[in-house]
Structure formats: structure tokens, C-alpha cells
Image (tube, rainbow over all chains, first blue to last red; front, side):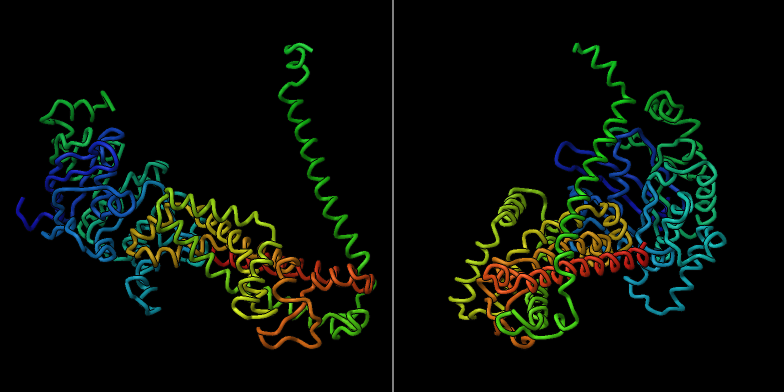
Length: 254
Length: 287
């Protein structure tokens, strides 16, 4: 891969909370405008890795990190990085749908308002375009003023994705976004990811190896805090280099 | 009875029926006590209530006339007290919940607040008398009474708003941060609004306690009968509960004492209803 094709470059990333290291010397390049899946058994450090890409692990979980994390070539682990700006560029969708209290509209304009978008027309346009991108517009366009909690779980999760898209991110991090959803809602989200692949760089943490196989371009396999192997998804699932990868994707452990 | 006999006697199903009956009885008992007290106070007071009693100034030490300036004085002392205590308690609880990690310091502060909450109000009265009335030279005044009430309600207010803030799910904070909000923006726009109903409940309880307070204000706001609505915080006043105490204790007028008690109970109910309505309005708009 050429340098310009890489959106996020993780170099020698180590991470620990209070105790022993959770991630050790992880090096991984995430290509621009693609879907990268991170798989691995529970406790392998997938979520810690994902939450470090927008520094949530550092700010909320008080993780200590070492190494480099280059976003378009600039290290975001160096001190003094503007968190608000970073998180608008690198959005995050959590495992369980997490609407904020308030209406559907409130949820969508929360981020843009903080970013300084004030105009009513501008905000309305953002609401519509992001809901359309998340394929939720037709279902909610007549009830934008209703509580976000009135939506079904699958709709809430697409609302959360739309809420991120309204910020115009470059990277979208998804932390097992379909773990609480039914197969149809899952399918909708996967279709949306594929459809928007040309516009964003997606990083998807998933416990569902089949999902990784279905949607991702590249797959990285983490085991006990170390990156075992990464590569194009078809190769990872057919001819992995490491025996442990083969065992995991075929469901022999984990 | 052997254990086996007991076991057959109390099948889970029967135990459930019994538990429910016992719980119902307790609930009914507690409700009956509340209704009895209300009926007792209002039953004695309401017959002596009249428009004049609400609107007139007291005369002849409270034997004649009404309680209008006393109502005003009570409101001034309590609202001023709450106006001091609310921002202080809110700031303290936000700092404790959002900016400190659970540790020795927060435990010490919480323990101190709990001890203070248990201190009898007459001690606060004495403290206020020495500090505000004498040392700071405020004299018996609305200001001294309000500050004393503020000190007295502070621990409870801190505790209730702390609980309310802690009850806000951590995920709300994470979501807000992940959408580019700063910590302060998260607190202001997400955490405090989500905790608002709980904070308001605490404020209502504090207000109820402050309005009904006698011992702490008799030493600090004084007990002189106001002839007109107090217009300066440096004037002394008599609150409704102090008025009731004086009328009843000195045997001035049992009728007017009962009427005062009824006014007090009605006022507190009115405030609670208002807080309730405000909370529901807010929840409807917010959820």
C-alpha cells in the first residue's frame, strides 16, 4: 500500500490500564475508504484498540498508551491534540444503541451545534442528508420531533450512525454495532456500510466472524493483546498464514 | 414446628400472598398516618382561615389581623437561603461526581456532609446567631436567617444532587464526548439536564424543610412581628412556623395558631405540587 492510501497508521501501539498490558506492540495500517474488521475472542483488546483511535480509552478509561497513531500522517497520541476536532473526524458508534435524551432531531444536531453550525436551514439539511445516508430518513421523516427512545433498537442504532455522519467524519469506528440487533437490522447496517464505503473509512470491531467476512475489505485478528495477522478478508478466511487465525475463523476456539 | 412443617406451610405461593398483604398493610398504615396529620391540621385551621387572614397584617401580637407580612418574610428567608444553597450544592456535587475519582477525599467530604445533615437545626441556629447576628453584625435579619438555612440545607442538597448526577448513565457522557463535546459541554448539555428531575426533587425537599424550620430561624431572623412586608434583607422577620410557635406557646390565640399551621401546610403542599408539575413539563419536553 502506498502512503497516501493509508488513513490510519497504528505503529507499535501498547496500552495498559492499572494492571498488565492490554495491547502489545500492535502495528496495523488502515486503508482509506475501506472497511477494516478487527476480530478476536473476548478480552483480546479489540475494543481497547478501537477506543484508542478516538482517544476515548485515554480520556475516559484512563488508559496509558505508547507508540504512534498516525491519522493522515499526524500523530494523535502526542500531547495537546484537540479532542473535539479529533472526535469529529473520527466518529464512534457503540455496541448498544445510545440515543441521548431528546428528540430524533435533537440527537442529530447535538454534534453539529457544538461544532458551531447555527443556521436552522443548514442544520435541517444536515439532518436530512445524514438520515438518508443511514437509510433511516423514510422511516422517521414525519416524526423528527419524537423521542429518540421511541425508535426500535435497529432504528436507534442507525440514528446513532446518522448522528456521527452529521459531523462529516473521515473515519467511523463501530464497536460491535450489531450485537444487540436482529438479522434484518444487521443486514441494513451492513448494506449501509458498503454503500458508504467510498466516503468514509470504517473500522469495525465484531465478535461475529461471519459479519467480518461479509462486509470487510481487510481483517485484523487480535489475540491476547497482540496482532496475530492481518490482510485482505478473503485471504484471512481461506488461507491464513497463522494456524491460530484459521482456528479462530473456523470457530475452533474463542 | 419442624423445618419441614414450616416449609409446607409457607409454600412460595402462600409466602407471596402473605408478603403482599403485609406490605399492603404497611403502605395503608403510613398513608393513614399522613392523612390523619393533614386532616388534623387542616381540620383545626381551615375554619379560622379567611381572606383577611391571608391579606392583613397582624395586630395585637397576632391576636387579630392576619399573616400577610409573615408569609412574605417566610418566603424571603427561605428563597434567599435556597438561592445561596442551590448553586453551592450544585457546584459541589458536580465537582465531586465529574471531576474527582472515588477516593479518600470524596469519602471524607461525603461523610462530613452526612454528619452535618444529622446536626439538630437548633445547633445551626446557635451557630448562625454567633456568626451572622453577632460577629458579622447582621443583627436579627432576613439575611442572617437565610444564610443559616442555606448552611443547614446544604448537606442534604449536596447529597441529593450527587445521587442524581451519579444516576446518569456513563454512556451518556461517552456518547457526548464522542460527538465532539468537551467535558464541560457534556456536563452542561447532557449530564445536568438528565439529572434535573432528581436535583429538583432534592431542592423541593430542602425547600420544605427550610420553610418549616423554626429553631434555626428564631435565633437568626428573630421573632419580631413584621407590620408590613419586609423590604430589606437587613430587616428582621418572623417566619410562619415561628409565628405558630409564639401564638401557641404564649397562649396568644389558639385559633390563629391553627390557622397559621394550616397556611404552612397548604404552602408546602402548593410548592410540592408546583415542583411536580415543573418536573413533568420538563420530562415531557425532554424525553
